[in-house]
Length: 237
Image (cartoon, rainbow, N blue to C red; front, side):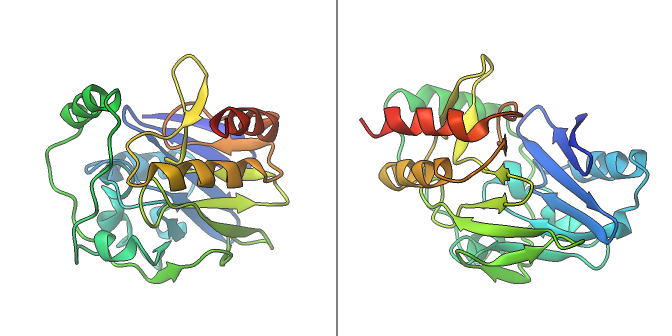
């Protein structure tokens, strides 16, 4: 795992499969997603290495129910006084009460999906409690007067959410938007509702953001809104 500082308070925890993000406020830490099962010790090591403690974690924000995002959530939720947030539509899957719907794969996605599945750990994902079921527009107080605005972005999963920090012009997209190894910004793959996924991309592209952080691929560190709007225009054609 690689730790990349994106802002004075923001760190990307980069895994071989996907990323988690750590927002460090004096009032406590916020973690966005948790990686695949078995990632908790690596995240704990990163927190310790940055001079914090696991018990400093206050919020765990889950962008959707897929195992490369909630895989270590159950262990991390037990580190202390942690509030686990997820959208109402994905919460039953995260809690293990029901199975999540499978993606509707385009023909070109099938081989990629098989390859990704083969690279995922085989250990099961432990169910995790959801303390707060989010709705579109809900605010999460990250400390020091910094709110994260919940943006409902269904399509990748029914309850996918993005988190927007307006003052910081910062966006966490989960898997609704991705970036390829060669830097191209694309619609996230493996969507349960491809039409809704495009609409959710377009909604995020209308936000005023300088930095966009993706579940897969390197973040856009400058002029993110301009790049997102250009891609949204191609999707609309």
